Image (cartoon, rainbow, N blue to C red):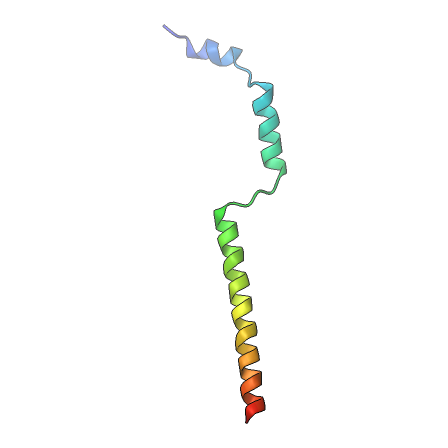
Length: 62
C-alpha cells in the first residue's frame, strides 16, 4: 500500500516546473478574454470616429 504522507514528505518539484512557474507569473500574458475586450474597444473607438466624420460632413453639406 502506498503511504501518501511519506510520499508527500519526499516530494520536490522538478527544476523545469519551478522555472516555468516563475516565468508564467512574471509575464503578463493575455488570454482570449483580454484580446476580445481590446478588439471590442478598438472597434468602438473606430465607430465613434466614423460617426463623428459622418456628422461633420453632413453639417458641411447643409
